[in-house]
Length: 428
Image 1 (tube, rainbow, N blue to C red):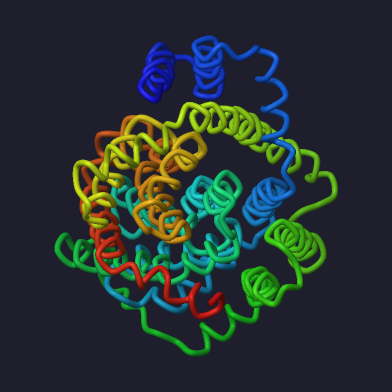
Image 2: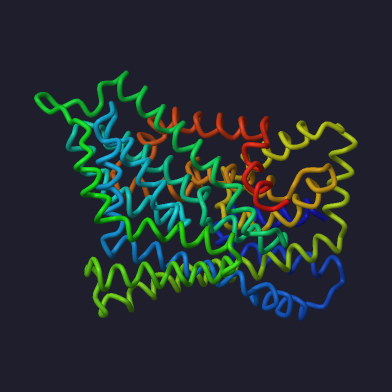
């Protein structure tokens, strides 16, 4: 039944049918083959969308929109510049560190690419970084946005697999920092090798005064991730309520403190948020129907039996699963891939003793890498648009960063405690 489902799904996608509708058609085929009334589709779809935790997604998407328009993203870039702008490959490091700050508030890779890319690519090009290299740094660092909490993929995974979102958020802290540091090392080496960012007669020096001045401007925004994680851990509010708090704080900062958003700008911000949310909610509803049908057809149990017949090594099963996810990432965007595959693969991983929190973090990182792999990588196309470069040029400069991300993924697979250390420390 799994192969029928995937075959129909990918056939329609290959014909150019949007994934959201291809998923619905695949569900209709399964209903027909399993002799289940078609009326079940509507009821299960509405039930899949009727989820309180799902409300966190529009809140965090709204935060990303407000940060971009309200001057918060620019101040994060200025603060990052004061901290790491003096190192070889300076603006590349600024780009990455700003993505870490931005991701710690919005949780969206695409919002990160659009906001940070729009701010960082022009000055990078001005300082003799090739446009394609500037776009490559922007695209690869945006993956951090879906690892460091809050993370929209973590929320989706938690909803469709009934896994603790708070534990997932904690599990993303060390991997997010590792990815950021690894990308900075890659930026340093590639910039030094090619002489990027070297402008004659200009030597930037570290200044404590500049760090302090930029921090005074940005510290209210930096309290948002602290409020989110601290509030969830302290039991003050849920991940959904944390999203609402973050949205209110970001809006108040942009309206009252920074004064770069006006009341008349809000309808456009809300409309953009609503458009993106509608797509995600429809996908969630259809994916929950798929999960119910495939579970009813005993697909997870049969898949687990198949894998354990091949090998009883937990590491090999995890590697095979990650290879599958990496290949899926080439042809499917993160959100539909997460919603379709997480309910199928998580029970399989649980049967071989792999913690759902650990698997959720690994799956999010793997599919996040898929956002920057052609031909479907949505972040790639956003980065191409921001930097005005061709896809072929971007992919060539992106290769070292892609290898770095895969290296960190392998490290996390081999050493699972890097993911589970903080969740275990707070949840025993």
